[in-house]
Image 1 (cartoon, rainbow, N blue to C red):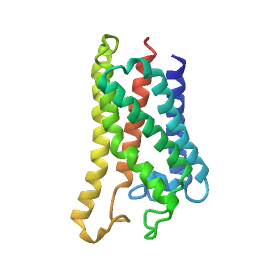
Image 2: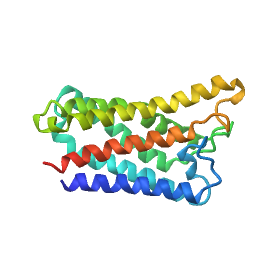
Image 3: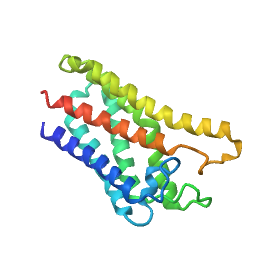
Length: 208
């Protein structure tokens, strides 16, 4: 129970910091700027702290869930979530460059790899985790919630990539990233959806 509470605390702190940065760094247009860019310049330390909080939330939740993830899907979820935890900490360690930067630094490349691991694979790991948990009768009362937040996670990822595809379809000159590629708000929806999944799983652990 304590680990679940700690997980919820860190997840909530991640969201609070993200909201604060939205107000503190108004020079970054949320319509097309990614949350990682809050690491650049003033208050950059806050975004790094936010990534560490997100990683700590997932790590404590994983430790709490570990005994419940005993099936094949659960074993896969364990390994996958460990990788995502490492990627979240990596996102905080390796600072991103502006998405408009053409020449990427090594540090930015490492950040991008970490970000890709989180964005692209979290829905898969979440699905494996929920599939394993629902094989345990103790988790069946929360089945609707678990499936619901897992669907939300997938919608978050799909919304982000749909925004990129649609933006480029509307304006082929939009390029890889920039003011005409409206991925900013979908990116924020994605991270909130992923965090809501963490909070929901941890919240249900408080029943035990």
